[in-house]
Amino acid sequence: MPRELNTLSEDNFLHLDADKVQETVEALNDRISERFPEAGLGQVCEELRVVCHRSRERIEWILKPIWPLRILRYVLIVVILAGLALTVVGMKAAVIDELGVPELIQTLEAGINEVVMIGIGLLFVWTLESRLKRRRALRALHELRSIAHVIDMHQLTKDPDRLARERVETSSSPKMMLDAYQLRRYLDYCSEMLSLTGKVAALHLQTLDDPAVVAAVNEIEELTTGLSRKIWQKIDMLRSTPG
Image 1 (cartoon, helix red, strand yellow):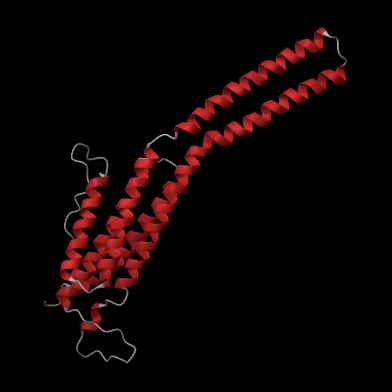
Image 2 (image 1 turned 90 degrees about the vertical axis):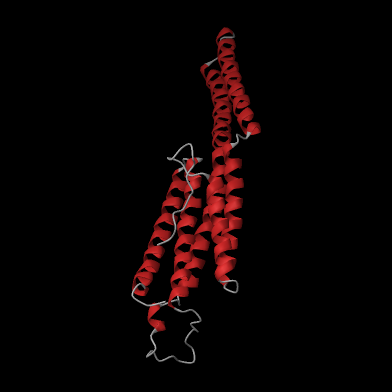
């Protein structure tokens, strides 16, 4: 079984700690490099470490307000209120000047159109901050999804039945350079990497409650859980193998 992942905050056991997740990824990277220095799995874990660090930076950016956009929101609100005031003033002036119905309707249309256009601009600016943050979060989640598939590719040919001596190999068969114990450790590392990939993805839910981000994180968690389940089926097959 993989060792317990220490990724929880010490003062709050309901939230993941980004620093501890990073430390766990770095520790796993060291363990893989020490046991399998020539394996490509170490390079994948190094890439996971880089993506984890990049995700932490993005999460810190998401937590910070984008003040220019927030100031622009209130500026537009003031402009809309001023536009409404001018429209009302225009209507009063039109009534005072005893304009006809066509002129009064034209005045109303001009004022309402201005307010509607400014309102559309306000809606665009009001949601721009969340859309920018969502885009950065989805970019990080796309990287994590790709890493999960790369991890799966590395364990794909690591089948326990290939350790059987009576197995007949062909010229195209992948070479098995690991014994039973090493294969268990290799698969165990793959499972831990998949688990940490899901943990890094889950960090984004603590900072951005966006439906698209929630759906992407759930997809990654389902993906990593399914891939890890396949790996543990192989590990179970190896438990009876001496090594």
